[in-house]
Length: 296
Ligand code: AMP
Ligand code: MG
Image (cartoon, rainbow, N blue to C red):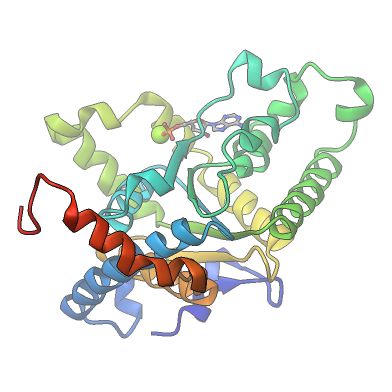
């Protein structure tokens, strides 16, 4: 399956209302997809080790979605097996007082990893043009009037511009970005919320806030559409992935991550010829030393 059908890099406009959230509209067999997902996971694991060893390029993966679209479980499954030393996962919640006292990218910058690492953002600075936009939160920010006294659309267009510039800045500093919007349907969200209510072990995942936010579904869809259309670029593309079936989401997300790592094509660092020539000597010396054996 060609993942380009999910890709938005500025060449075409996203119109969410026209997109399918359901895997049944794609020509993919579940068992095949499960097998491929496992294969991609293995390949991602190997390439991540090389990325880490090479320490030249960094990968930032952003997950955005409505509640219950499967951000957490997608992250858990796709990245399982990866060496935790080279991956940082950050969940961005409601900003603290400290965070709100700074520019909106401040809390993000602290989670940009060193090159060679993969950073996964469970929500991100995109919340600052999503939940903030839907609820006009900027109006309550303690900032000079010149920064907030303007039509909301001007305020958020400035933010789109800042985000685009920031992503270009990251790209120029050796990072690649993948931005996923897990696209769940209104109907499926209800089903998953009901499961959370009906399954005691899942009760903790549900909150009254989820119900409140669901009432703003259309506003969120508009905000997502606008955010994607204003920030999709070749070096920081969005992927809008159907999210009504978790196996399908995992399959597509793991394939896209695998493909991006393949483009990076990280390699283990080569040692110098002089060092290589010394290896047999090192080997002999180790074998001469007492203690231990090769088989232990
Ligand atoms: P959850 O990911 O379900 O634990 O919820 C985190 C909550 O924090 C979501 O409702 C987000 O919309 C909210 N959130 C994240 N970033 C921001 C932000 N910059 N401003 C306001 N709310 C935010
Ligand atoms: Mg939530």
